[in-house]
Image 1 (cartoon, rainbow over the protein chains, first blue to last red):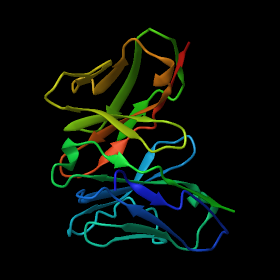
Image 2 (tube, helix red, strand yellow; image 1 turned 90 degrees about the vertical axis):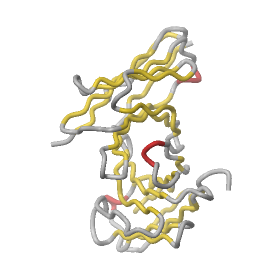
Image 3 (cartoon, one colour; image 1 turned 135 degrees about the vertical axis):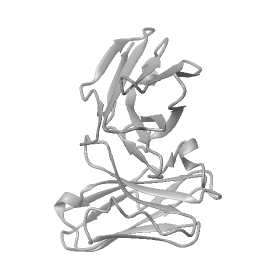
Length: 116
Length: 112
């Protein structure tokens, strides 16, 4: 597609439920990133996928968070047993491979997650 | 500890003036530095990239400087317009990490 697509755009869930967030990157972008942005805060790195390499999960805040990516396409971020502190906007970005540091990231519009 | 600092207070300037935003960092040795623009309810949009061996980069009304001795980048918007009002984020890339770490951003408001 023309841009990075994220769904849903908004999600309200009850504390303790599991949620799944989806990211559709730009075709041809092999690098994919998930960031979290709390209200009024900067972007917090969560996880990075590059092609078929093992993902960099160093930013995942707890074992309730996991993410998958099938090849170089769609990625899903799953949060189990959601807590109110998980409320934030979850942003996905994609970039060209290898030289991903050399190009800007293209971000989606994010999923706004509210845990009540 | 590692820190990226951007002025958390909003910057208000008059239309037509030059806006200057600051990004300071400590305990990083970034190979690359990027600036992004973020509008409310949207994801950040890439503006400019500058490498550690570059002092300055320009794109239309935008200029970025990178001083690795001062550990600082300055982002300038000349002839500012109300449409430039947004939050501006800097992001650092350190070799071997394969990801950018973002600052908290500075909100710019250009007054007509």
